[in-house]
Length: 160
Figure (cartoon, rainbow, N blue to C red):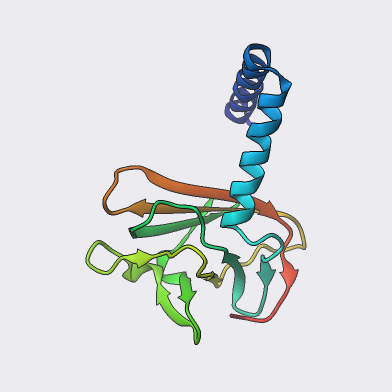
């Protein structure tokens, strides 16, 4: 683990201890419950699969801000995936878009309750092991970047 990551982890522990000391252990338990609930409502657990195209996973569509996103960026194990190799599929039947085509005039809309398939074409992780995937979405109307990260071992699966 790099010095930067150790410092970040120690800072998080220190802040957690501070919250626990000031507000009690039940507050920490509630914060962990909220974090787990948000994680499970954004990413469908165990949906990461390795297939003949690359990797794929499902978003449960998420309690993100309502609205549209002008960009979508993805990293696998800290390596950015080319936006031309990222496809996003919604609806039934699936309508696919390439991330490089998402912009302010043609935004990506994520509606709560409408699952979204994400395919990372030509992405290989080599050996069967856990990988960390980071997803970043830029909201058109509001400045903050929305991001989500998960770590999981891909299962064998069919291409979306």
